[in-house]
Image (cartoon, rainbow, N blue to C red):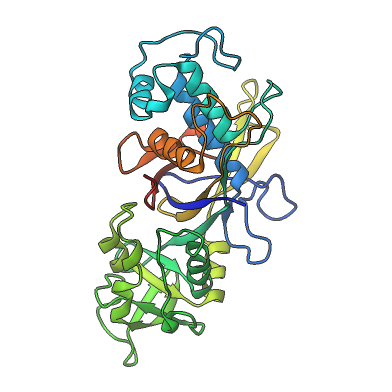
Length: 346
């Protein structure tokens, strides 16, 4: 059982393809989805692999020659490495110890004598806000009671976050939505005496509620993006309406490869890929244990507090946010994300 869970938020800067493999449906390469809801997600294993690569890049070949890992060259003058070492004094000025800390945190990449699993796990990243084109205000961030109730449940695992969902946001009928009283999505004129919003080509009856302004008060100390802007664009739909949008309003791109000899599409090289659109917001949790090792003498990190501190310091580098890539097609600019971490891990 993990000792502490810390939430972090993922804000997609460019479309993201966390693929689930080939499919027999309309889209050849769909994104990962929850089986029971079909809501988009990113599997914890995908997150962990991307995080490990992010940490490994900090080494940039700084390991000592006696370090038994994939990084053998010695460039001890690398400034990014030195900054990280200075923030985590237990590692001292020793690249071998930093490499060992990666192994202890994320687990060994191969059978190299380490005798335990990594001390840091990752929950699946769940959808929180999904961007949808709006007639007014350019786009809206939509969510639904199912998503908010799941977020409330997950945040109970995180002792530093206190998120409680008000009962009036737990049930919404189809064709209706809840918006803030400062919303920029609402149409200027009422239709049949009702406020309206239009998302894609669908119209919804909108009800303004003051409490929308305070729905995320307890997590606004997590600076993952402009919360005031969120309130202006937030739309809470029914579960079924939300499900329709996250299934039908993702980005689908057709990919081809040109045969250089004929100048036409190569045989069998025409396929479609699905992407989470830019501006999607997801959340996950880093789950920390004490280090799994029989012999805990002379370890660069040990307890779960060390593990979380190493994760946060290494990822954020004393900033409020970090940028990285995840998923497929990173060589064509896909999967760029912004991450911020919540909770107090000192």
